Image (tube, rainbow over all chains, first blue to last red; front, side, top):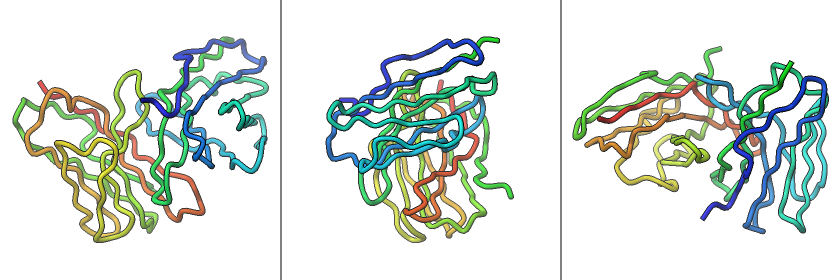
Length: 112
Length: 113
């Protein structure tokens, strides 16, 4: 039973446009969410996070939105750049030992 | 600063063979983690170590053992490899819970024939 779901395996966006990556979760006890970015042959790197007490967090071109009632979060990238082409993972913190539950990832392709 | 270093990067094993994946971090972090990543799935936690001298099972610990040798090093051992353990393995470390950011190694791709 997947507690964190990323239903789009891939997404293709024109350079300069907005990229929107989606993530759904089932466990209402999750109270902290993170997005990681992964390039081929590298480990994931942290991108942005959001606490359940907020509904939005912004960092430069990246904004994460959280809708607790819908158990949904999204990552917006504006404007999209070629270097943004990567796999993006959504994750939720499960417990105080920092166990994360991960989505399956969405491969973002930015077209020139 | 190397961050988190994993060895080897690639390994091919035959069913039943054993091997150890090594992980070291130079950031003086307390917590360390071993994940596996399979196609179409998110990362799944195998084992973690919240501090030197302690280890705990994660979501998928069967078939694996770990050792937290010291604060820097956390190794993952496959005693009798099976084809189902073909995967990419990632080690990660966490400085403090408040930081909420894992630092990952580059991964170790393991194939079991």
